[in-house]
Length: 386
Image (cartoon, rainbow, N blue to C red; front, side, top):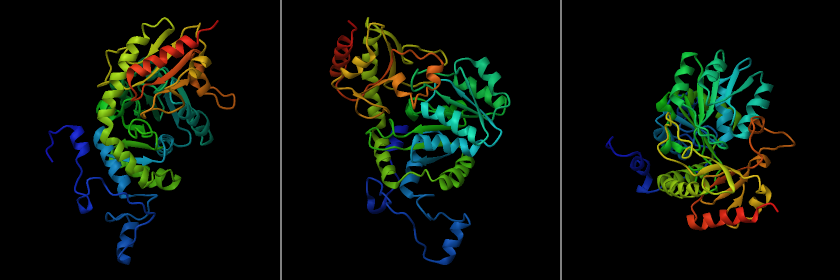
């Protein structure tokens, strides 16, 4: 295939499938048989290219991994049963007892809980740092094993200077990991900037239909091989062939969906920043950074409602937007920030670092943008305090 064609065309163009099928076959099987004893023995010794068991490797899953790795500019990828499977699998492979992990303050709540609580059980410590402060980052990572990033973040939408951070991390021998779910491989490619490992919650934009829970990690071949040999195979957070088939479907429409998400989001953001009932809008389109490496904008944003707006009434007043977690599908969503990060009375770092009680996250889906704006306006009007 010609190397100068666009990534979108490469994404749509597969090698020939069996029977010249346009869509790849789904290998819905738990195991693969062998013709001869010697074939089995070679496979268990790591020789040859024969699948053994779908917990370890499956052709449909492998095709999904290859496509995401190519889009991200990485050598290889490992798919998981969920985004947290990818996050925990990578960290458990790279870190060990006595290691210190540094992570940005405003990160995905369950990633925060994993690093603060579960890693502690394995003798690891976690330190949180302001992702916008390069001096603080350099001070924190000295002697650390890993630096975990999320840019833009999934609540405050903060961007980090990835190129500068990657340079600092390499200077101090620290491995960098980033959650790139907000941007997808089409809007940002951290590996090109020097980041070591890129993670996606594939449940989000990559799926695009809110019918799959999945995760994927992209990096150099050597590291991915070890992750598959240990984290995937032994911890068991593997991706099924059926879900991989759905994700391949989602990947093919991702560029088109992203264009519509961006178009609608920017229209609504322009209206929100001028609305008297909205105190602040959190989105890279509003807070443009000189160091930004984004090639476009996704449609996840947060807003601080004015003090005279009741958050509960605001969320309950919607007719089109659903109240719900996650994002990246076709449906628009609203999520009250503080309520969403509680768990048994526990608050995560977003509260520790002054997330406003008036903060609400919005995901702009694929519905008509005029209908969505009318729904927002109506909710703001109904939520005014007496």
